[in-house]
Length: 340
Image 1 (cartoon, rainbow, N blue to C red):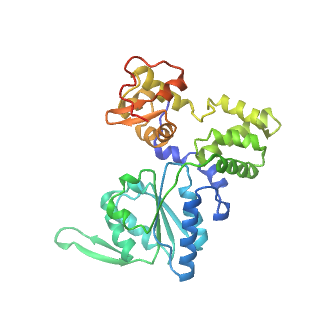
Image 2: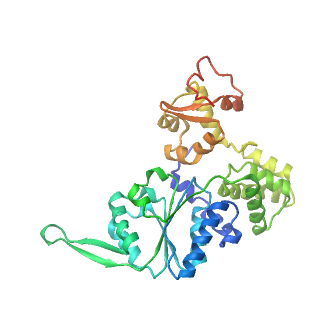
């Protein structure tokens, strides 16, 4: 089995995601508190005729951080320039990006926690004072050149907010965390996407897809695309609950939203390591997947649903995990399980 990095996972099917992205707050479903706070901030900034304050969006992949960044740009009526933390590997890259901005523009930096610390430090003065100091030459001829920047808005997105340094975090005026979506919100998203894809779907079919989407719109849209293919070939292009169930069963996605890799991770911990605790690196090698992908993509949902827990010694399966796999725990397998 081939492996993929978290960045590749997040960028798969990008054109498909872009075609389904809402472009206005009115079309954005879910995350009501975050949406209300951002709408209020936009309205206040527009009334004052000022750029929006810097925004930090955190949360698991696929919840709408990039979508919200573009919606903010549309709401403010400004251009959005997009980059990612790993791409900006030297101060000159950052200076080139910021000096090309027009007043009020929005800069979106995805995975901002992966930015080089030496580059991050240049952001401090850029975010606070809208200037950036660049060193020219080296040795005795070295000198600092101050570049004036137009007032801009930085929107940072991260899947691991704990890795963002305190100095950088403190410079964001609006800090928001996105949580997994409720079933009813995901159902509305599936129905909206189906309308854009010109595929017929009823309420029960949309709910069936949403219930297996792990609380994540990106997964819901990807599952919808696969169910659409099945419905087109075998169900006269109409998605009902039985059609969705049959299509998703073909994809080995169970009613709880667990896919083949989820099951492989849980089975590895239970059958090979007696339920744990076992280190993340060992799990990654055993299932043939990148450890970052397991930690950022698969593990959060497994922990949230109660199948897995983190302990000081490593990852450990819970009683619910054994019940889901239909396996009886060996003696002592759950002795380190944390109390509920």
